[in-house]
Length: 498
Image (cartoon, rainbow, N blue to C red):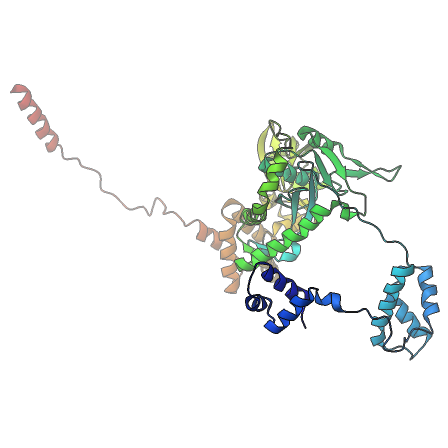
């Protein structure tokens, strides 16, 4: 059967003054067929006459009034639901294969008598006018970082006119993640659009208790004011109003998925390595957008002299448990800071602790999961002196940095000997004061050999014993040969006399 596409290609080649034989070969049809369609001068679809008669009896003719009654109650009812209702009301009358017929009839009813549909209005985009931001979940791509599944978001920035885009890894939809992503995108772009549009992100807006509407957050307005941009957001529940960024999210993720397939592996050695890969995908997609981007740059503002700090500052007093509570989360810090009030800088993925401006600790920011993050290195010294606190320690899970350490503790507990807790704390203290990976490797070797984990054996492996003074090699006293000095003095005397 000849298609419209084949005939269009035939006419296109004939319009280029190609011989009929060549044009027919290009369209993959015979020369005789090509001659016939050239004479007709129409497309195959234009020669098909519409059919208005039925070829078989309508199985729903007798019950159509019932169908219309259901549709009058709710025009949005699905045909499948109506079909199931008809099967209940008329047992044995309708076959499953007749569902498609009912769907066609209901679709026709909706076109003739159904409610009006929502109309979408195409917009004329102005260069340099608007940029859009959003976060998109990349969890389904199967990316691994450091050998582990890597669940994450990507902050996505798009210019509405040229579709120029930029991305940054994010772990939450926090204001810090939005601020870091937006500012990085603007500085890479080198210019500032007049308007920034988002959906109703909690990082940019908050709900009004009285009117139940939404208003912009003060920090978000401060950031846009620094860059001279006007805020804009879509109507709640109307994602299509952010059409550029919504479409760009899907296209970008599809591009990443295809690049991962070409790469042959979704595994990356580090987050930085993966971030470079994501930015390379964005640069590749931007290659064909430079012409329209230049039109935008001519209409955009210049960047301010400096960027805003991409963090939020709060203060917290370190508790006697060697933790600082920040935004409802507990973070451990070195115990020497107990009782001190520290400055906390909350970044998108990091938390910094400073005392009088000096960095005294940092860790990953908590996103979901447990409401605490404790580094065993901060407490192991005190815990070793108070081993009785270990069994019921509120943050005890933090004292098992890897599965091997947990297995080592279980092996100690199951051995039946006393002092299992203290022995494990000694092993953990070695990990804190030497190298955790070396301690883990020796623990694994002991467990695989069926041995009871032994801190002294690990210490001996990590810190080979030095020879004692009694075992030191005896050395004969040094007896210098002074005759050589005498000869040297004689030589100097002779020269001076000469």
